Length: 325
Image (cartoon, rainbow, N blue to C red; front, side, top):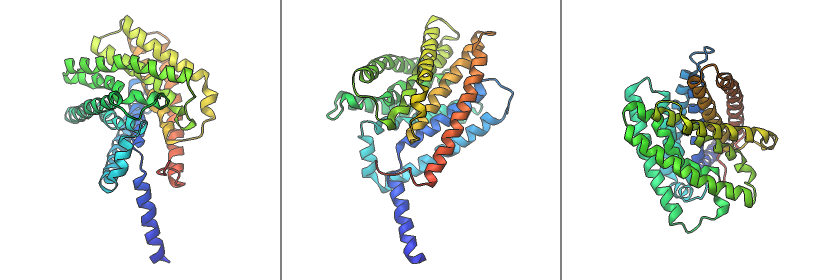
């Protein structure tokens, strides 16, 4: 019996490796954002939780990277197909964004922080150039392919200044912020046009609507760091993020009805970004409603992260992940 079962186990393991999705890096973005949110909220509750979450995110980042590298070695054709897929391509920059977010997590360890940031920025600029080049010289994109995940490759540049400013890369941070914020407006127009006038997103992609929250939230955090305080443009960024949060909350029942997919991790990082931005707003406007609001958002984020982790573990055990689509 063992002689027969071992080959079957090997075949099943190989199959899971072959279909291991690049979108797993969205999990690292969510957990890193969760760690930063606990630290930014300034709560004395569970003071070491942020550090523990940062360690978990770092270990998972290493594990997922090694697994995907193994996939690239054993199944390079499948990786190439993902790299040319109109949706999955956008999740390759989730790797470089995860590195930049981990540089925020480990900002108290300067050498590690700088190494993570430099690696993340170098990878992300390269991926931004590649993705934008593929958009401009495409032969297979249609408007139906447009969805909020398109923000990840280009708009992800606005994450860089959060750590870059403190590391002394002031002009480079402004460069990356400028690229990200400008193309956020361009891509926002395209995505909203697709959502308003064409067919709705497939059920599997519905959680990605939460990605709309991320650019103005992260943009606000990055901009206030670059400008050194709160001004009217910073207010515009934050209030756009807050409005989008209210808009998504008003449609909560639509999201509740969506079953769990790996894409459900799209709920995590954008909500973490809004939580961090709200905590930042509370620091810049002491005595305002924003600090208690950040605590409410932090509790909501915590519930969603726990739900995502439980659902992900159950899906892995049930063999529902790493399947051909």
